[in-house]
Each structure stands twice: as C-alpha cells, then as structure tokens.
Length: 101
Image 1 (cartoon, helix red, strand yellow):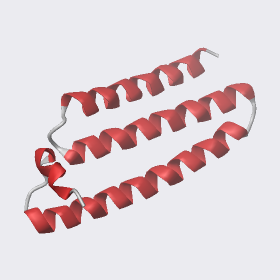
Image 2 (tube, helix red, strand yellow):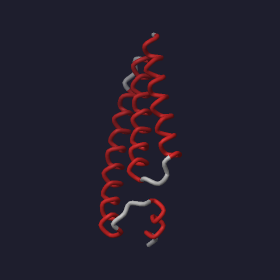
Image 3 (cartoon, one colour):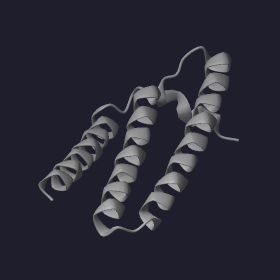
Image 4 (tube, helix red, strand yellow):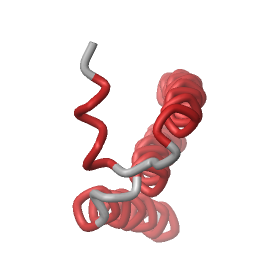
C-alpha cells in the first residue's frame, strides 16, 4: 500500500518537473517538446498505478491510448521542426509567428 503512494509521488513529481520545463524554458522548442512528452508519460504512469490499485484494466488501456497519441504528436512535431529548420536555419521560438499561412 505504501509503495503505490510512492509511485504516485513519482508521477506527480514528473508532472511538476515537466510543467516547470514548459514555463521556465520558452525559447527552446526541443525542450518544450520533451517536457510535453514527460507530461504525457507522468499521466500515463498515474493511470497505470491507479489501475493496479483498483484492480481494473481500463486505466492500462487508456495509458496505451495516451502513449500512442504522444508518439504521433512527437513525430509530427519533430517533422515540422526539421522542415522549419531547413527553411530558416534556426529553431528559435520567437520567430515561429512567421509561419502564418
């Protein structure tokens, strides 16, 4: 019982570190993407630990869905970042407003 609360604390700490990474570093898009992935991972951990605690498989199914969406999001985000770098030769966030269509 105590170990599951420790796992919840780890999940909460991962989420808080990723929120701090998003807010404290708003200039580097790669660190922002990694922080977003860490948010998805911490929510997924939390769902898995809750599903183990409640003896229900639905949390694990939701966790797989979250990981699938996170993988798709990161691949699309990195593809856009590579194309943007080829065009502008920089990945500065300040210049992202130039991508208006």
